[in-house]
Image (spheres, helix red, strand yellow):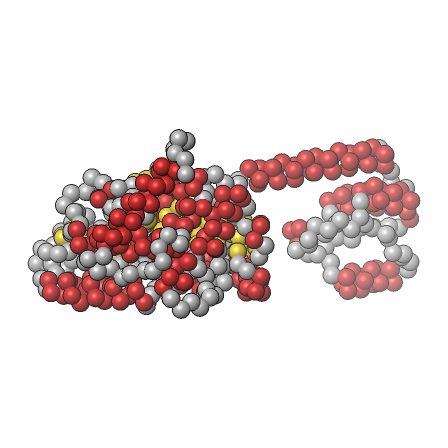
Length: 486
């Protein structure tokens, strides 16, 4: 626009003897007003006028999109042709400058792209992505609460071919969230493409599990999918991948099978226990008429989706309204405030056992929140001094048999988890330990075909299971020795 005004003044001076003037107006000229003004001036002075082929560019400050409607060289050529206005800059020089500007622009865009690529987004894969839990999990992951507001993520939704339409709709809805941390979203229904370059893999319950009629069939039906996932994770995912197993059915067993078929990353495969912990804290809060968030350090031992032991010996409550009141960091033992021990030993235990065994009240929202919180702790550390329950591979801690996935107290720090073996006064009775370990050992043996039938725990049948368990471990050890021949 400035160039037009300058050239307009030059043209007016050069053609002054021809009765040409340059109109001025404080505000922009609408086309209708311009035509009316031009007609009046020409009639008054008995002038004639012709249209001038002026080339211009839309102005950004006036709502234009910056589209180039004409070039500088064309403008000057028209000015020279119609008004005898010349420029010392030739077309060839202008083209050379334009080419230089274009190259500089391309280089600048390439630098932007390279800087963007340096920010490697976190590749998050979600299996059984058509499950309800995924729908509740995605808003938490894309909020920046889990990995941080400065960590971009790319989410891949993995499921079978039958769920492709559901995944497409979910992907579109994810983009509508306009999350500042969501770099991209993709869907995958091709098994061989699963978990490519994955930093995080979230294993959800498969909502289309085939109907089975016996406990043994149910256990063995978990093996093929876990074998496939383990193979693909080892093949396609990063060496530092973190695998988190959630859900409400055979969580410990699925975690163990994944470890078996992805042995190189076994330490980075964990089972989520915070859902059961949340249910226990909520039951206590209802009894004590307080908020579940005020109750801390409830420990979940054993089988997350089966026989587990809810340990309240370390549990504390904050901000409890009673005769004794203290600052926010002041806490009191839960067991010292629940005077109804009969409720603790009977109703509390029975209620949680029913919730764990049936999966009641363990919907998509609770599963999603438990998974997201565990991931958040894994990446940023758990709250200082707090005890977190997590399903990990037993190495004999607390007298637990080796080789099974067992929920136990841990803490998260420096990007990893550590079992809290230094806790005092948390010994578990022999009967309680036997009840939990019997089921977990049998689940593994039956699933792998080493045991024909699953027998619910009874005080007398654990010795047979333990004997068989130990014999299998000894045999496997001997088979690894070079001098042992069959």
